[in-house]
Amino acid sequence: MKKAILFLVLILAVSLIFWKLFKSKDGENKTSDTKEVAIAVKQHSENFNKSISRIVDKYMNIKDAFVNADTAAIKLGGAEFILLLDAIDTAELKKDTSLIEATIMSVINDLKSNAISMLSQHDITEMRKDFSSLTDMMFPAFFTAIKYEGPTLYIQNCPMAFNDEIPANWISTTEEVINPYLGKNHPKYKAGMLHCGEIVDSVKSK
Image 1 (cartoon, rainbow, N blue to C red):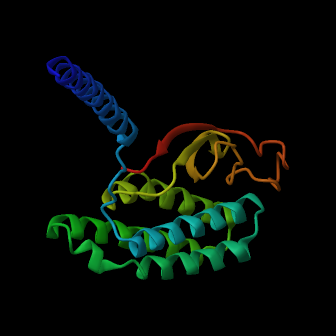
Image 2: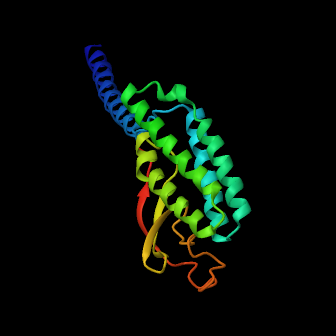
Image 3: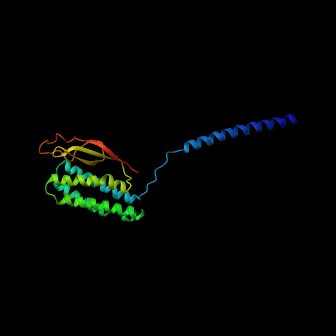
């Protein structure tokens, strides 16, 4: 009888040890399974980021219009760009300090001034100069001030944008270089310098 009881106790003890070992390993597996890469917490609302995305898209439309030397499309895009700047959710900016808000509003006003100047031009070279200035305000000032949270953008540079010797930048959504300053219909090079340029920087989500 005593032997039977001891046998049962031994079985229970062994079972308990195996159960604890199994439970421990199972817990470790669950812990490792649940370890995931931390999801970046966005600082801005979805509406705010959508408004910035629309501005970036419109900039790209203007850039493409310069590639094609389409002055009508450039002016239409410029007018829409200004409207989109006005449509930025300024309530979102008020979440930051008054100094940051004032900085962002100042940058936005500078962007609008360059876009307005671009609309007033009749010569495409002068339009391109305003586009170059607008680009230089977009990056880094605008994207830094708003703490950009969109897809990666590429800053590209043409070393001979004006008079074959003055460089200028533009922004692209892809790494492919398609030059808006020399374009497809340049009076001297035609489309021969369409891919002239290189990536010099990038804009990434903070």
